[in-house]
Picture 1 (tube, helix red, strand yellow):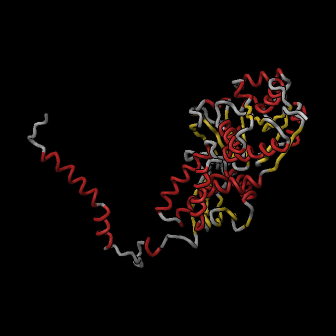
Picture 2: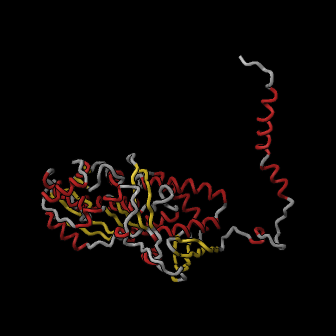
Picture 3: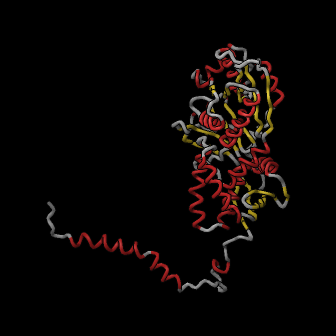
Length: 405
């Protein structure tokens, strides 16, 4: 048995195909490829064939969709997972799971190294390296694209030199997809002034069709039904990607701050993610106190930053999960949404745990709110502000005629 085996996280794309040849040619290693299915809808048989063409000694295809949706996406929904308020963390959420599966294959095959196709400019190198080292700090991690300092044009040249099969799409854009969303970058998209062409989208269709309504039901923070039809979260995401996407919902065009310190223009499409997160956050607004909401916003932002930054395995993420989970006990109810021309608007919500009381909020004569209480409340609420302003206005008057040295 060879003691120079490396397990490569393999997508079959340009980057990882180049990596196979680099590991073989430069490190003289036997390469085992592994593809982790998180719902990317790839042709996994073609990926297996490509692995064989490239000379890998073994290939694994690992179906991790259910685990990804339940253990990663589900948690992100509860945390309203959006990096910088826009990106629903689709790629970022999948990376620690992929790393874990790659490490399992490495242990099973007694490999001395693991490898990935990340560049030195991206976030994924951070996510993979930290996750893999957290699982086994003794493992050797090889990142060929980073080590060779390859740019996209150099990769294509290297691929042609080493007889790596290419396709036209890979020359134009770099894409990454899982069930929670799709990312598109490179090519003309690198110019932040240029509008993304319609050809890059596969989930979002800009059709002018009549508005539709839908109801999403949550149980303790987790979506469990759409339009009174119970379904698994995985099936719901697939359903909403189609339904919301058909209304042009789900495009994110974002100038993003990467972990490595550069700004980048990112294009995402995530119809289901944006629809579910909007509904979830609105339901929280109905059932959580203003104090819980204020603090949870801080926690949600920190949680999202951790995931984006490759720190899934940091103890803080587990600590935050416990708080988030506690807040979800009351996040049960329904949210009604209107889908139209790229917009998913919340137009109704209800819950047995609602803190909204119409008898207090109404301006009608049956209101039970005693308006006379407001005067005293305002005086107490603004007391320090009023006193501080009085003092600031009195000080200059007292100092008239004073000569300062």
